[in-house]
Amino acid sequence: MVMRIVNYTNVCVAQCDYCAFYVLPNQNGGYVLSRDEVFAKIDELVEFGGDLVAFNGGFNPKLPLDFYCDLFAAVRERYGETVEFYALTVAEFVFLADRARLTYAEAAARLRDAGVHWVTGGGSEILTEDFRARHAKWKYTVRDYLEAQRAIIESGMRTTATMVIGFDETLEERLEHLQRTRDFQDACLSDGYDGLFSFLCWTYKPYGTAFGGREIDAREYWRHIALSRIFLDNVRHVRTSVLTQNEDAFRALDYGADDFDLPIEDEVTQKAGARIELDLEGLLAIPRRLGYETVYRRAERPAALASE
Ligand code: SF4
Image 1 (tube, rainbow, N blue to C red):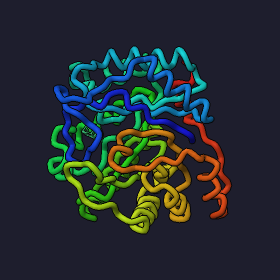
Image 2: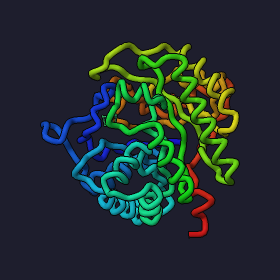
Image 3: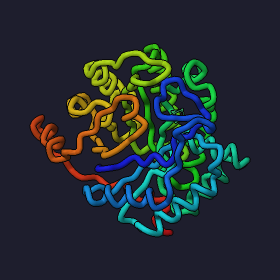
Image 4: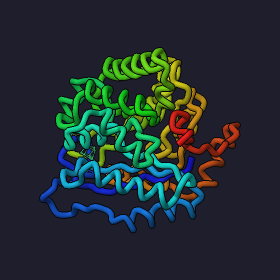
């Protein structure tokens, strides 16, 4: 996939200590992209040959759920099926449902009716209550997160699993995250849902964050991808992170990953030190040299929404 993460606002009240992206509502430097700015970013993505947008921003208390529904409906109307988009992360979805005083099912129905097909599993980082209390205590609990994700699936939209490693999490916490993901997927499948489309793991970028720290090396990342591939045998695709591992991401194909995207922008990780390479053919040459055939993949419309 070739994709662009569109960060529509950097204003956020969650104050995660591992984030270099946000500003508080009354601080200087906060922004909200206009609709024209969003369209311009999508047009530029299309010129690059991409067709997947991932909207991601902060918990901005001035932007209600209706703002997002209007934006997503406008994107769907302008681009139809030629561009697919991940509308929000699960964490942002929880915030918006909470602010709108809606159940997760009601909030999911609003998004779906606005033309949304996908809400990504972003914002999970490490799914243990202790990790969240240490680093992101206003980013909701693991229980909130998983209940919201289940409601998204039940609404007919699709979602993905994510994980971020390389903070101060213990190996037990990494395993707990994988166990919770596996259990969640088992429950979805046994209830007749497709569940999580894929599992994407990326690595923490520490630069400019309050928490700081150092990056883990590529070998640790590859080992974790291998572990995830074995552990999550009920999730079909494992996606490696070109955004945070650059050239090293492709070696993860040897460790069980079978999916990746080439991002052309993500301000959140770029502010924390991520480097984006725009020579897409140069990037694709790396997996080809490793012996892989690269195939362009589109984010498909979910089967449950196919008749609409
Ligand atoms: S990681 Fe997301 S939720 Fe946390 S402070 Fe940054 S923008 Fe806000």
